[in-house]
Length: 315
Image (cartoon, rainbow, N blue to C red):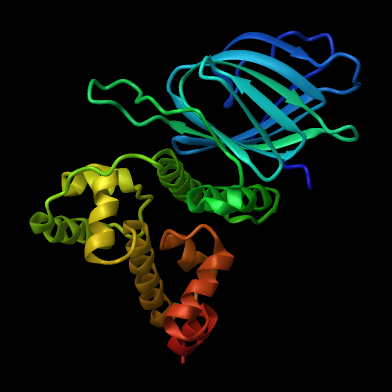
């Protein structure tokens, strides 16, 4: 895997006993590199709006910390890790992941026999409880990322962002696109957090009105860095209730409806045929951050590629 060049890099070398603070660490109480192995720990992070993503490479380390207000998703790429948090021990290796909430935890990271431990990480603010504090999120293992849609989607997007960030002309070099990527990370993390959550009561008679209200809000702001939490607030309900209403009334998620609005906006802009505009410019302006998926979903929706629409509009 190519080493990422991200805006923030933290290195801890042998003999150093504390990693300090960066975008991935809360309040660190204890830290040590695993003795007997040559090398260091390196943490590379980037801030995407309210979300933080990063990659950790290590010869192996133990760390104890308190995380007061953020949700953490860890995806090992090589090696494994175990977490003790007073709720039993959780472990994950390549192909699995861990979802960790707030509070104290001790983590033991171990590299494979040859090479370094590597992991992708995403962190977002925890949802709030009725009193305004961080809601309790059960620590849990995701044994097989591919078997859980929310984990699969988030992991695939983290891999995409890792690749995009090393490209000299990558989409994430633009601040607006970074914010849009952060909004999507917030949504994907919220979906993962809600797996197994109870179903809130939602009156079917009012559901259609709430869906129309949410759709109006999304259509008007389709090019903005929207999260489903914002859309839910506009509709006067919670995120889980919003998702259920859309599944009942539209048969799809609210994020899928927003995706359709963005495709329609992109189509109109491309058809306008502005000679100074590129397909990439329009995709990014319409809220798309994954350009490959944009092209594929655009062709599936309109039966032609974005560049064919643009060329047709310029005739």
